Image (cartoon, rainbow, N blue to C red; front, side, top):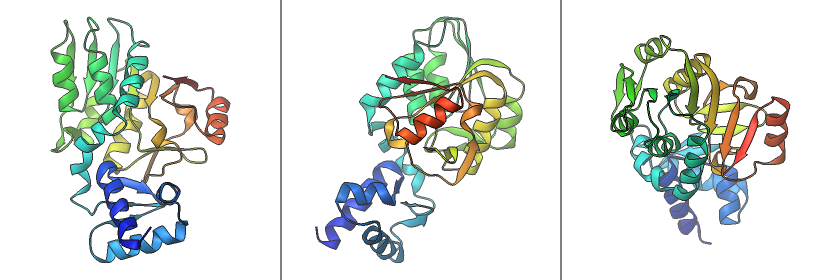
Length: 252
């Protein structure tokens, strides 16, 4: 494959997901990591991407536009994860959901549940569940991120700290055996860490594309969560760490 074709493929992958790992790009394109790094340096010099630890992302100010595209990425897998997660939630339960494409699908799967008490920092999730049968929805206040409808910052964290919910349902930017759970944004990671502290159990929803993916903000270790719902068996190293931490793994 010519360099121009590779670079076009890299741009397509980053546009779809907002960020892509060097190793994943090398594997999908059948070239070495160093070849991808050379392509990334070329694209970065033109201002088309930015280099991040272990990967490549859209330039600052552009990465959030990828949220709607990510809603369509691996949609069937995310819907299967959402259905399996909704089955873990009883009617009348208190639930806290953070902002993410998979948690947005979980909200859709929970729409038929009755008498839920829902806390969220996502405007789309709040609207989706407020229309359900008798759900009470509590929306965090703070700084609104326009593209994905996330409300973040100290005000949102203080709002969450008022509650003690039965179940937290969390999205992640990546899961790594040696690092734990990561988020692409500092504010998002801080919010997720607060959510875990104020829930009796924490369920992480992540499709297989998050396994081994790195993101800048580490917000929790595996032993701080209770359940991971995914669509494929994770790599052996991650599976071992989950089992060692006592995390229940559910493959939808």
